[in-house]
Image 1 (tube, rainbow over the protein chains, first blue to last red):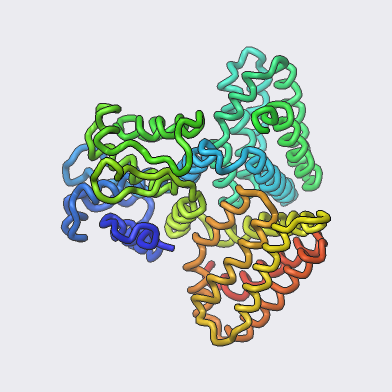
Image 2: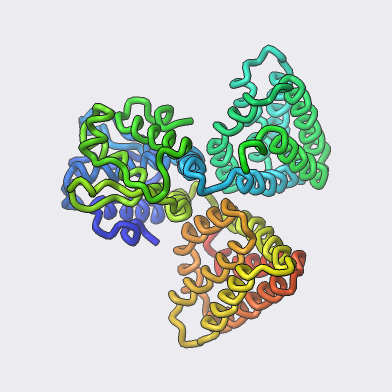
Length: 247
Length: 247
């Protein structure tokens, strides 16, 4: 399962294994700094080039942010941005046509409908100021999306923020990570699909109606209605904007 | 969204963008060989070290298999193994405790139950020799799992194969990729959990009963029963083996 199985001959694998092990045992935590390239090269008996390769991979996976400069404080910092990294990986695999967009949409529907239902269920808690704030933020995003002068790119970004805000209210971090990844993986396809729509202004209005239905169901503590509203919204937009992209 | 946004100053980003672009436009396909490090360095005006970093990242994402040697035919080959790469990334993020195991289990339950229902629905098709073969393979795996002398590690591997076989029959490649990733991400936790069970031989027998219920529901074309059997199985095993790992 480890990198050594995928790439037995690669000298940088020892560093990846060690980082995983130290993360698991708590010797290494988010915000910590990795030892310098020089120190890691000495510790693992490998070249600085190999150390740099390991750090690039950790960077690509959203696990470290590489340091700049070469002083003693230049080591990479441990972070955790799984959706950035996984989104990029998924996007590359979508580009290679291994993963069909229709399958992405089906997974998105399932996970996001479940998250919206969980968000609506959470709303039932007698007092949950954090949930109230999150709902208020979602309402603000919808108000901003009403502006017909909003550039398309901003519309897509805020639209994604609305969806991730509702999803995060559901409280499952793996769901939020996967949906964030899928969104990043498909943003190019969404923009491509929208460019081909002749009635985009009308589509935008319809999307906003659907967003308000989702928000109303979540705010009204109605899990089945929240799941159904998300599911209908994702399905409708896919049919309008994506379907011509596939055979 | 692209790597350049995450790491603006990195010279290897141009290669990652170019590979994505060429995959999308079909200039590069699975099985193709990338140009040599030397040729890529010349084309993008960057050092061979930077080229090597880009290729290592593509390797880590399961998008290329690096070539060996340094001759003209040593370029990396384009592959598509998203679950290997994404599983490894998820595993690292689980190790850093950013993603709770309980959330992984909830997502696994949802996606795998849906896939089993789709597998059962597909079974209803009048004639589907591929589905018959897949079901026969699942039955063979269960027969092998009955052997009480099977080492634990082999049991876990075959168990995972059974689940992925049923999932793949559902036909959604993104679901299969995500579940494969989650399985790889949690294999260490499963083994750790099982080591702490005092009644593991009895647990193995119970898991096999549950596996047979899943297979019977899929083979019997009963989508709700298939979904319920998977859901109960995942939940039961989590409660027995995982729960002590979390606060």
